[in-house]
Image (cartoon, rainbow, N blue to C red; front, side, top):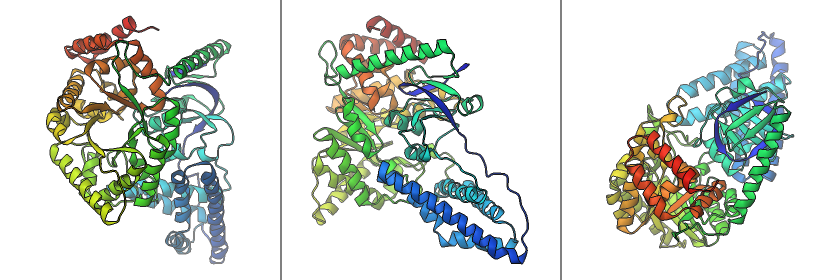
Length: 579
């Protein structure tokens, strides 16, 4: 028995058998030469393997169509298209005839060569395609070598997935009815895996570093997504402790259900708004279960990240409409596409050599450089706006010029909708995301062109403190109570209020109940977070007075280090909140 400690990213306590999902390189392949009279039979064997791989994929695709969203099912459709690609098949045939080597070696050599070339490219399109080539070539090899490999989409038993890392597409397409928990070497609270785990309400502990080395298949695990601990092969005493913790967790959930319909109001009558963040259209109905008062961040880029699928206007319109209809009269804030950095757009040719992608061509910079693509998204949002209450916000605004350009393109998109006789709501509010120091420093200027602010703390903390939040060696420095971060937050909120607009927060910090009181004291009007975090934050809001929160914020703004401020906030919480 041993206990591993990592980062709790999705609440819940669960036990079950480990499923070690560690992708290996191509299997060891025996290389041998063919006689000329063996070429045709070998080609037939290769074609049969491709056909069998295709048949398996079609079964998975059909199941995905039944059980998943169209976006998720289309990932498998894209892989089927690749296996049907005659150029790819001709390349395999040509290499086999030229080298007179067995089919396994031909598939392995061509796939490895293609992947190496793609991964060495500065073009994100090719780097993303390498994952797809890896997937389909392994399917062919598994057929040739008669290897049965179970994917996360094909799970037929309840498991806790243990992995070094998971791609967003792997989380999107896994059989979520069978995955009871996620344990991962890498990742943190703001990683895509964490965001999706919370969206799908799957308990998860990430950032464990050595989980895949210390856990074996079928080990019994207890995953505590509240404390951030994974117990491997617990003894009777630990199992009893798990059951007790699970009982307490469920009791807490019952308490949260009891306050779901109550307002997020402090003891002295100050009302704030709690909203949810979503990535996928099918999450919209789920957020209402947690008492969300709207959607404060719809991350639209997940519509653009499916390999082989273009985010056309009609598809975007349908996705936005689905969310807006599900929310009824409640507001839905759609962030325009935040592509770039750590999010690769698979179906777009990027020519720039991104040495520092997080400082490069991403978010609003990407959209402004491609006005037609941008206006396609804006038209889709505008058309969907007639279904309910819609707001638009632009990501990574660094100065007033970008905000003005984005608003000008929105005006053009409205004109194009009118010309096409497509109705839309003409009173849509437009906001700027405050995610970089320059935006916080010029928040008073940006407020002149904004109907609201939304603070993206994931990036604001990263850029303010020069910390790559995905780097396990330095992400401990990404501290929200750092004096610089608190000053940027206060500066932004004050500028919004001076102009008479609201200041919201949609970064992961908004859902961190340990700093809720501090954010209240700084004057934040709206909190938007993973839906399952709403009850935790509401409990804090309803248990404190705004007067005491303001005093806490005043003290924190005088602090000289993040450690000092973190200690201050923790002590305040112990003193002012019931256990």
